[in-house]
Amino acid sequence: MKTWTTALLGGAVMIALVAPAGAQEIRQDLRDLRQDRRDIRNDRRDIREDKRDIREDRKELKDAVKSGDKEEIKDARKDLRADRKDLRADHKDLRHDRRDRRQDRRELRRDIKDQKQGQ
Figure 1 (tube, rainbow, N blue to C red):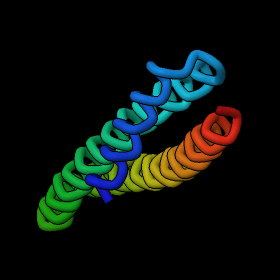
Figure 2: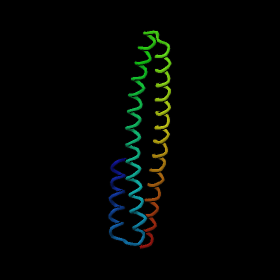
Figure 3: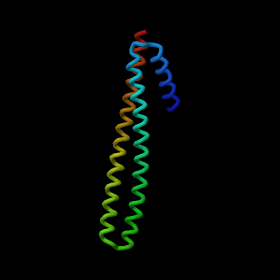
Figure 4: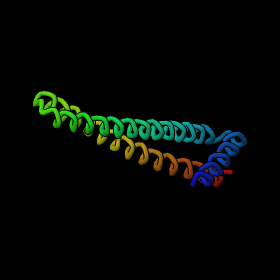
């Protein structure tokens, strides 16, 4: 998949450089794809961090249960709920960014096809 994307982007860049008509649309599609990749990379990083936080919160909850301190247990559960909520939100962001990337790829292919037909 990565090789295919690289080949597609390389071909699109060559077309954008050679043909001025419609090239602006192709350049914009390429910018959109780069931004989508950055967003996906950041979402994956956020998910990893959230999972790490959840592991730490579970350990804190386990320690709080061992100690028997009700306030500490309550706080640990609250932290765990908040981190799980963050994780769900980050997964949702990742799904949306992947959808955006698919749409941008379609637009790029359509713009390249339109430009080839116009030549």
